[in-house]
Length: 250
Image (tube, rainbow, N blue to C red; front, top):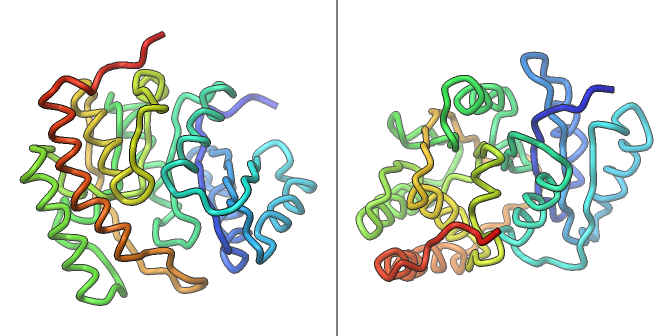
């Protein structure tokens, strides 16, 4: 079987209602072929067991699983996934949620932005063409939207959706960033990766998408996650001003 060039990383914690459906949807896309890596943080609801059952069937060569003990944070899950993807030779590496808030049908659009249009990072953006969010409480929409405005103001980052978690990276971006130096674990992790890529000179494109609030399972959002994002950006700005953001030493 010819190796695929694209890997979608999906962190999970108690996603038994969604994990099989999201895996089957991603791996059945016809416009481009994507492999899937699940990073499961010890879900007590049996999420990992569902993934293992899928791996024992027809998805054996397309689906992969890394199990970790306990909830260690979104950022560390993605760092783990990035390193796994680089070790296994993937050229385009994606971040995606398990709950269908990110539409799998948008994956080929992110891929094309990098593979065909020459961008280094493609962001599935909720705010680049207005506010494209469905079924979120208004308070949460406003919090997210103005958080992105705040980040842009403090950091100068020319991105409308600074906290977006639906992204495609070219391999060279993740090879250049010092992944072990990434500080944050929650939404600030998403900001830090974008900010670091921008400061290192990589080309970034925002691809408009519609974000739909989860229908099944429980949200992992908390006030502390937004607090980390709001206060963490000041540290990012200081790191940029003091020359701390540098390519990884080879």
